[in-house]
Image 1 (cartoon, rainbow, N blue to C red):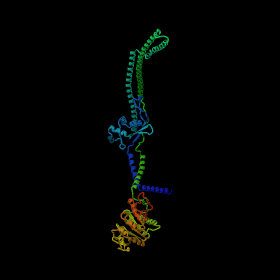
Image 2 (tube, one colour):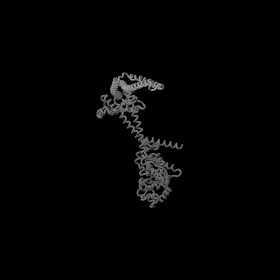
Image 3 (cartoon, one colour):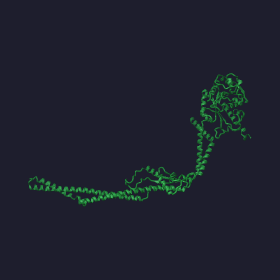
Image 4 (cartoon, one colour):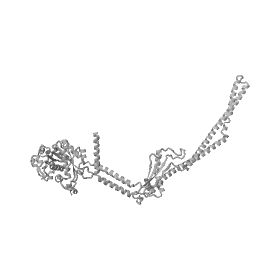
Length: 633
């Protein structure tokens, strides 16, 4: 349950950051949207209205055959192949050229200039005009149906409807012409076949007739007349054989009766031989006759079949039918498809807001600097103790920022430093942080300014405070308080050249003393890490309520790391939107090994709180009456 709540809280923070980014860049979003809407409005009123209309055709699947003879046409079309073929025919240059020719004179147009001379100069040939006509006409199959749409556009609504109608008409005409062509081809082919079949039939009949004459055959049945005589002779021979066998049982070979029977038997056998030879001859004639007759019947059948197919083909060619029909004619459109002013402006408004918001988020995402306390907490794991605003009023801008808490105690910036002091009190409830080091990741982030102003507000609160300039490489404390740069300071005190009292200087701010850096030594890190520095800090804590130390940047030198191990706490100063967060993370990691618990938190410096969509509560950092002429007056 706790994990769920934590995830919800993280989402809420991200949502707030999203809102803050949009608020921060609201003028960019507004400007981007206004420019986009202005462009769309100009486009809507300058652009010529473009009208669109369409014709819907029903194309039923039907293979383009006319007769049933496989030799004439093939019916091997699949559904997908057939429809893809028809779509490509509809998109073909042949149909476009037919439409262009039917229009008589067609002039291309431009949505910005209409049908002007410049546009006509670009499309000055029939080929280019046909190309343009194809570009403004779309063939759109309706999914899962046999319906296809022919859509066309033109700045003239009447002409748009005419073009769509002509496109459908020329396509249907092409289908009919194709059917006629196929019919004519089939008819020509059948005529050739009929002529040949007729000749073959005539030849077969002539051969059959000539054979009849040569063989003296009147009909096919006459050839079977001799079969009875042979059967009778065979039957008679069989009877004689039986009778001879019976008589031989009673008579000798020399017997007259036996001799007569044998003589009669020989006569019958001779007749059988002659009749058999004659029957074989007649059989050959019959076979040849039947073969010739079959040839005649076959030729006659082919001839009759071709005559029937010829009749069917001529009838099919006479019928002007097709598998394509118009189910919705083109109508003259009343409203243009573009520009649609209200719709386009609405889209531009919504699109501009969305696109500019996305761009803003991308820009913000590319920004790797730290700008909010949430970002500090997320990437560094440290609390943001205070956010010091960038000077807003003229007085703050011309004033020295290091002493603003003293010179302008009621300003917004001074209030922010008092918030820093309060945050330190809450951060050290159990053990008060009396010695604090100010450092940063890189130079010029405002660590010296933050150290001076915190020391000032602590002194104003009645705490006896001392400010130590431990930046022995680029010291600035002496310059801030108008002290001589040659004055003895921290470096001389650490080598016992001067006493602590001699190195300490009073300031105009009550309860605030400073120790300047003194002469710049060749070995600042060794001095700050020496035992004498530790002894000096202990002595300062005995004499003062708070010790504020200004240290060099953590990434530049090791001075801050050395000092971090000897004080109660470290404050990391980050300039708003300047330093890459990886550099700050590196600075934190460098300071952490000494004692990570001593890093108290972060001060965000020069925060642009008045910028549109700022993360920060502007009412909290409100303008004080003395800085607002309206209130002060």
